[in-house]
Length: 255
Image (cartoon, rainbow, N blue to C red):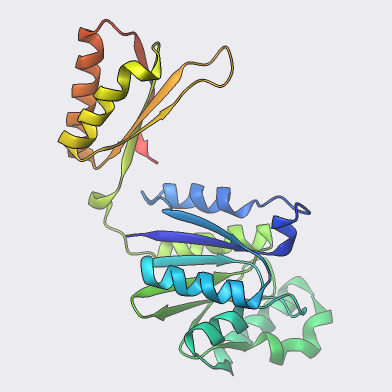
């Protein structure tokens, strides 16, 4: 399963606010053995957002969006979905009930006159509960891609990403796990070893040279459990034979 996260908002790209939602989403997906394949940032620009939505539909199985579900002029996410995929926006009875309940729960009486607007959703979508805010999210399938459309407010996104994760149908046997090493050696001496691992074991490798004086070279191996175990054994035995000092600094776990 290939999965992407789209962070929407001028305030993020202009540095007015730091994005918090990627870390939250990554942590929650990691708990169920899923990792993101791409993270995309896009401004509150209708044309740009439509292009990004069409791109992700063509390449990903699941796409989560963050932001743009309010009622101010820069909240364009649902409009972008509607225009990108030719899906009309309609009044949703289910969404209306959720919004009404949310307004009462958080005492957001300023939204009472806006219930009709907040009840608009994409035809064929399913509303997603918002346990901490007012605006409901949506789930909709376009072609072979399932989109989860969530608010960008961090506390609301954090509560709703848990609902999304519980909804994802993912087989644990397909999970990608990783093992991390610290190696007391120059990166150049490990290039052939890493190439051999990728060629022979269908395992992805990554190398991160030290940035600060006290750091050491970090090598990461990514793969499915069986293949990763074989690659791990090969890597460790190769380094031992070459008398290269190394240490596994974390157990194999989901990346």
